Structure formats: structure tokens, C-alpha cells
Length: 250
Image 1: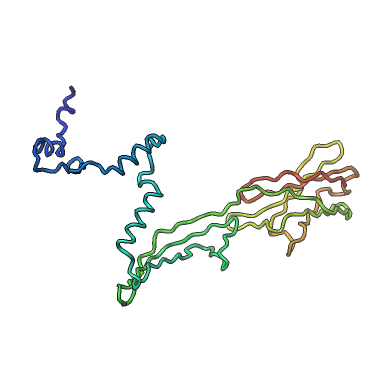
Image 2 (image 1 turned 120 degrees about the horizontal axis):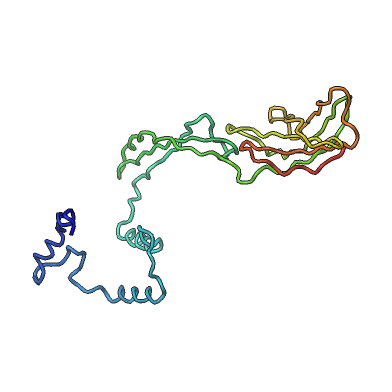
């Protein structure tokens, strides 16, 4: 046997148990045992549980339904004092972005909060206790689960050597402190590969909920020829890309 094992201290609980074994005048509480057999109702419940296959570990704090039943029973033994005021908590905005009055969290926004707690007054009256020190700040960034929707190309109009294109983008697509949406326009000239020609960010979108105006002015002398096609893609602040719009021919 290794020396380190031989030098391990003996269990003090075992020393107490060994000293009292065989004594009828000492209760064996050192092992958590009672001096009475487990009640019949508990033994029957244990047997039912075993027969129903409940042989796995439960939550460390116990079964939720059992904890609720115990709490309800203890509550009948020790009812709350109706004169005592409840504890009060307050959540304080602690970052650059504050929560809207309607309590709705805006997408693509980071929020930061601190919590302070104040206890109610003593039973029978008196002033409430002082507010606690603020907690460490906690934060949350709101990111939509779904990526951006597919845009649609609306009206296209030639004006000299440029092409003006209206791209329909859902009005609810608004960025925040985490970044902005953008729309990318891709063009394919007859016989050539498709290429990115225009990128428009939110700061260039029109007021209201109308389509986003994109202008293809990459041709210096003449407008794109007939048969040129366009597609649009929405990119969200996280860099996720939508499916491209249906190809539209000039």
C-alpha cells in the first residue's frame, strides 16, 4: 500500500460510531439514522417508485413538485405577516441604450442593466431599509434568429449612362448599435460574369418605408446594353446574407 494512503486521517464520524456501537442508550445520528423504522407510508412510496422505474438521479434540489408541496405545507404552519412590506427590486439602465417605454427590446442593440434591492419596513411600520449597492452590470445583445429576408427588384429606369433601380426591402429591417443593414446590387452584362456594382447602407435609405433607391453608374459612357440582368441581396449587421432576389432583365 502506498505511504500516502496509509497516512490518510481516519473518518471522525467512524470514530464516533465505533465508540457507540452496541450501546442501546445512544441514538445513531452520526449516520443520519433515526431510532425508529421508516414510516410505512414512505416505504410503500419507495416501493412504488422502484416498480415504476424511477431509479435515476433527480435534481440536486429535489423534485419540483415535492418542493412545492413542502413549501405549501410549511406556509400553512408559518403564514406570512400581512403587515410586512415585500422586498423591492429595481432594474436600472446602465448603458448607452435605454429600454423603450413599451418594454420591447430593439433588434441589433446591446442593453446593460444594474440591479438594486431594498427590503420592506419592519412589521408594524417604520421606514424601509436602504437601497443596496448596485450589482455588477449585466448585458444582453438582441440578435434576430432568422437571417434577412429575400428582397425584390421593382422598377428599373435608364437615365443617360446610369440605371436607377428600386429594391423593395421590408420596413422592419432596422439596425442598431451592433451595426446596420445594407443592400448589394449585382449586374451581369450579356456574355460576362455577374459582379457587384452597388452597395447601399441604411444611412442612404429613404425616409419612410419606401423601396431603397440604387443607382448603377459604373458605365462611364453608355448605359448597360439590353439583356443586362440585376439581382439584389440583403446583408444584416452580423454579415448573414439573404437569398438573392429574382433576376430582373433590363
